[in-house]
Amino acid sequence: MRHLINILDLTTEEIDQLVRTACDIIDNPVKYRDICRYKKLATLFFEPSTRTRLSFEAAMLELGGSVLGFSEASSSSASKGESVADTVKVVSAYADIIAMRHPKEGAPMVAATKSDVPIINAGDGGHYHPTQTLTDLLTIAREKGTFENLTIGLCGDLKFGRTVHSLIAAMSRYTGVKFVLISPVELKLPGYVKADYIKSKGIPYEQTTSLEAALPSLDVLYMTRVQRERFFNEEDYLRLKDSYVLTPEKMQLAKKDMIVLHPLPRVNEISTAVDDDPRAAYFRQAKNGKYIRMALILKLLEEI
Ligand code: NCD
Image 1 (cartoon, rainbow, N blue to C red):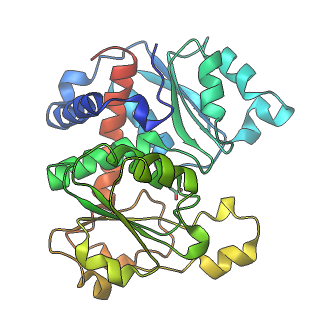
Image 2 (image 1 turned 45 degrees about the horizontal axis):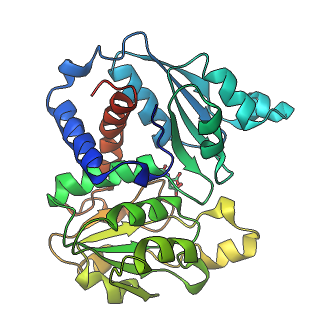
C-alpha cells in the first residue's frame, strides 16, 4: 500500500505517469467516470481549505466514487481530545482512501502508520503540501512543456509556505533548474529545505529581497501569501504582509513567456489587474488541481 506524505515518495517516472494520466483525463473524461464506483474518499481537514478539499472531492465524484469527511477540527472528535492516530484507525475502516490536512507537521505521517488505506498529505502545518506540488507540476508541464532548464523564482513567505518547500523538493530533481529565493529576511527559506534539496545537490540559487531585481531572469514566478496563521504575533504579520505586490508595471520587467503561479488563496500579493495578463496562470493552475488529484487517486487505488 502506498501513501503520499512527501512529494519525493513519488519517483520522477511516477510523476510523469500522473501528468500523462491527468492530461488524458482532461482530453477523455468519459473514459474515467466509473472507475471508482463504490469507492469512498474521506477528507479529514483539521485546517481551513477551499481548493484542496473541494478539488479532492470533485476528483472522486468525477471518478464515480463518493466522499465523506469533515472540514474543521471542531466538528470532529478531535475537539473531544481524540488523537489523530485513533481518528485515522477508525476512518480507514469506513473509506478506501484518506486525504488529510492538519496544522501539526508530521500528523499525516503518523496517520500513515495507523491506517489500513492510503493516506494523502493535503498539507501539514508549515511543512509540506505534495498535492499542491503535483498541481504545480501539471501546470508547468502544460504551460512550459518541460521541467528542465527553468529558472524558478519563489516569492513571499518562504519560511512557512509549505507549497514552496514541496515544490523545491520536486524541482530539485530536474536538470538545469535554478532557484531564485525572494523574501524578506524574516521569511527566508528554512535551513532544512535549503540543505536537503538545494545545497546537497549543488543546485544554483540566488537569494534576494527584491522582486524587481529577480523578475527579468525568471521562467516561472511562484507567488505566495504571507501565512498569517503561523505567525507568533500579529505585529510581525502586519509588518510583513505587504512585502511584495505583483502589479502590471512589474510584469513589464518579466520575460514574455514567464508564467505566474500562486497556490491561492491570494490576499494582496498579486494585484487583480495582473489577472488579464496571459502569463497569469494561477486560475488555470487551480483547475489543474482536480485533474491531477483524479490521477493520484487512481494511482494510490492501483487503478493505473
Ligand atoms: C496553500 C496551503 O494551504 O498551503 N493553499 C492551497 O492548498 N492551495 C497556500 C496558502 O494557504 O497560502
